[in-house]
Image (cartoon, rainbow, N blue to C red):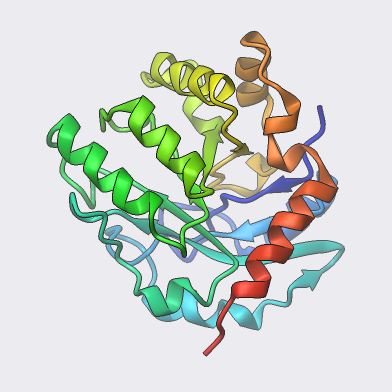
Length: 241
């Protein structure tokens, strides 16, 4: 299976990543990707760039050096009500919004709290992708939450970086993937790259999905036509300011 897009990528705008945006684009081109997304960490992450970085990324063209660029962000959930650290006005101006839970931004509390936060996120019309939801110990009611993601049209991310040999979240991620297969919930396979050399390297995640015979039709970045339909729908609703 060849994936055509990597839509979770970081740059040196945050100091725990190691490549420039130009290096990321070149890496995507070399891997033969049609699309990549700029999804820098939002401001609550301790070393994230100023919010101006998110707003100003439109200086990067939508097509550069053979690669289509999606302008986005990885927003942080900051409370059990599903509040995010990026304003709805800014989120509505972007083409690809990932929402994730990080320990640096949201304390791990209870299954009920985490479930409630994800249900609120599911209803947020500006969110496109649920980032690495098996990571960091945020237990939640998978059936209730994943079915809500499907109801509200959210993509569930299968994050390649979570399948490294030292990862502790693999069993839970596999269970979430099985649930997505059972309930036919679309997913997007991403790298969460913090170094250009990792962009487009999906092998660990794809191997895990193959082990459970995950349907290719549910992987949105496995088909260029389907992916471009999703992008077109998203771009049609973007409200620049």
